[in-house]
Image (cartoon, rainbow, N blue to C red; front, side, top):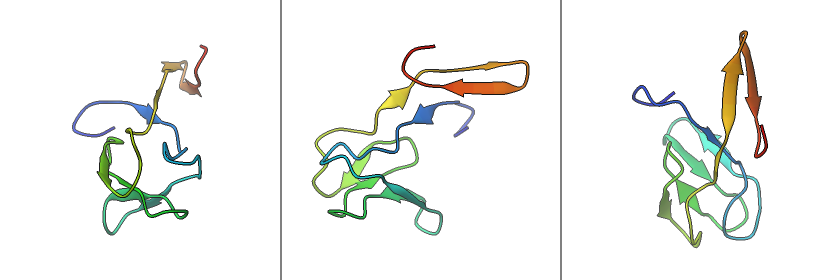
Length: 71
């Protein structure tokens, strides 16, 4: 939930497929492999990634959250 918008992001860096980590101090996702950086919405803000983080489909039903590509 960011500014009232709900979304789910893939943790896979779009550069070479490493898993990004959330850095709360800098409020950004950082790839440990080559230093790619993404903002809280998944947009590229630095480094070599060619595209933003992938947004994943999700649904919330009966207090359960399902996240994935095929729901």
